[in-house]
Length: 172
Image (cartoon, rainbow, N blue to C red; front, side):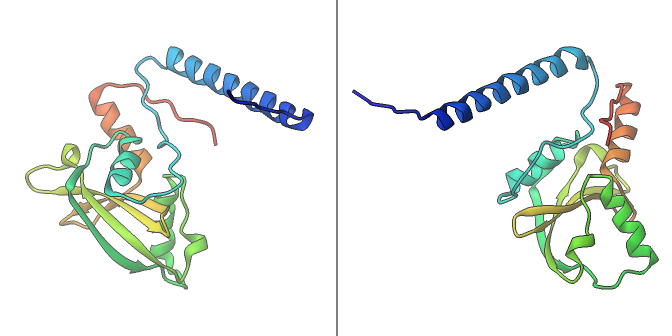
């Protein structure tokens, strides 16, 4: 037998939590019902990245399948002073809802995974996630051997349009 005592403030908190859960379920149900063939433009909220699987899940949220067996990690340092090219690079990163501005001078992990769906015989495309203390701080696509970088939203939109799928982007 269990005895459970709830005080009035505790009851109010439990009620508020239940109300939030019902609203969230309703919102998700409505989004699923009215989404049709739309592709989500934002990755699921990932508070921490601790495993290669977490990184694969991050990119799957943008519609990119990754080859987890190709995962590689390096340490890179975000420069303290930015020139025009690094500022432009940060604008590409900002497309994923992340920003490197708060990480100037910090060393981050650079996770690189092959993206087979965007790779062809003459070029390979890699999904790159920059992680600082298990927190994603930057994401982009890297094309090799050219070294060209592109934003996740732009690439997802291009890939979806090639497949004939309608894209819906949330308002910022």
